[in-house]
Length: 265
Length: 117
Ligand code: SF4
Ligand code: SF4
Image 1: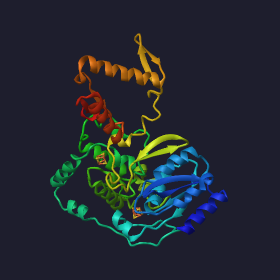
Image 2: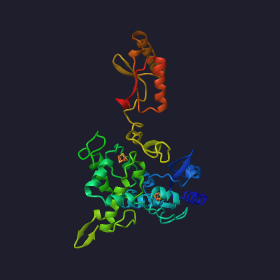
Image 3: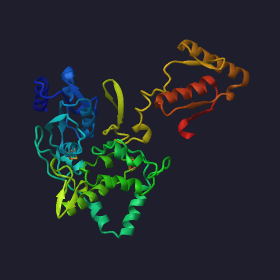
Image 4: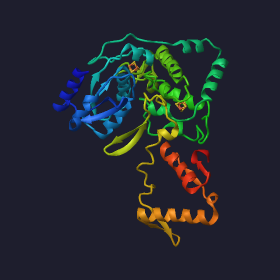
């Protein structure tokens, strides 16, 4: 960690980055923080804990305030994948990023059920093994369509419409969210209209979800949301060989038209 | 939970992901806790209705006015003529203090919370 702090400090002092976004430990609590040269002492609190936040989402807000500047950001595997998607969707504007890669511990990978617990370049930590528990998805895929729908309807009935799954999602960035469109999701009703509320989100996630699992982690009703999005990812991969978060120059098949067997972007 | 602050302005709310009680979850009120902070509709100064018109007042004047009126109503009509409605925008501790004030000082059990409206 000391090495990483040194690297960040150097980048700040040399003016390579305007500021740095990472996670800090403060009085036993973990939170995101953004700092510049002016409060360099904050860097001492930098940490790579189990706890995590949508750093990509916070980065896009910082980027909007700092056009044209280079922003340093601590990235774990999921942060890197989110930033790839946000870049594809032009959510970082003219700001650029300098990424400081952190590999997660095997414990974090297990806790997150994470298939790729490390970014492409690692500045701190060692690659942990991929984790991939998909028991629920396998079980659901073996059910009849009716049973599967009944399962999800019972889950969706628990929803308290807190919008946490959307708010925490690193790749939910729309200014006007369809989930707040009163024509599709009538207001003032809990649980929200089912299954439309959850399936709108699932459809929107099809070519974006980077499988960080934060939606499920924040859901107060313990709805296994990630399993829906994982299914969407699987379909996208099977049909189009498209995996969100894989590479910045991958183009989403949902934004392309096919003409004479060729994909036009 | 955390409030996100950018250039001195509160811009968002985040759950505390490693909090032992909430475990990274918030309800919709929590997720929107930042919204009233900079609202134009917020009262910034005490106002007293004088001759039907809301008029700016000092804190001292406002507090003694409220205390005086509460005492007057209690003495004239009895403590049960008073009731207090507390707020989800207050902390637990503030709500607790209001409960104490209502029961021990005003002398009534007429206290409820806006979440039960
Ligand atoms: S989802 Fe993967 S990369 Fe992200 S914090 Fe968890 S283990 Fe690390
Ligand atoms: S986080 Fe859970 S309870 Fe909240 S809106 Fe999403 S599915 Fe519903």
